[in-house]
Length: 257
Image: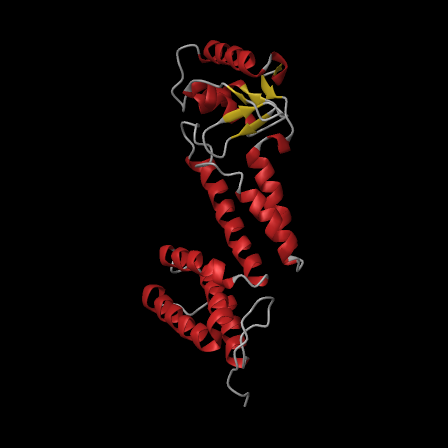
């Protein structure tokens, strides 16, 4: 079985055939179990998560009834009764959120190791697993979902960085521009946009963008750019030509002094 919790909760047979998991409580229960595949989840934790701290009078009996419905949907062997709780019989890679974490981690490490081709493949596959908000069927999803949404954002930024290293500045600049408009104080995003502008328009265009960001940080935070932006600024000042990365356009620059 495969399980999806990045979006509305779903279960699938290994051949991709969907399994009917009807009802908000049943999907909440499956979500809570799928977040800890192969691990025992205490009855108290499941009751709290499925009923969001407001369980029925006999929460244990209500949970047992839900477990019975889930077993009928997935197959009896899919959910084990263990001392003090229940366990979804699945590996981490059977659950999309954990598969996302693995792929995103491998992609980020590949990028850091200087392999943007591998990083691009892994991060693209990781982000393709998302079909909506994380943990959408948990009644109280805020705390857990925020962590996964943050990791999704980090993977998206790393994929853009890999694309830039592959000479695809023209493909990612519109997305970068939109992201920077949404988060004008995000220095990593701004650094990526400056690099894209350098590859497409040369150092002059990138330096103009840096100056805009410097003024924004000063006006809103009363702060100077951080180490990454400052290092990029020095690189631009020292460069007489745009980056010579794969696919980067070739433009003559001013002579070095």
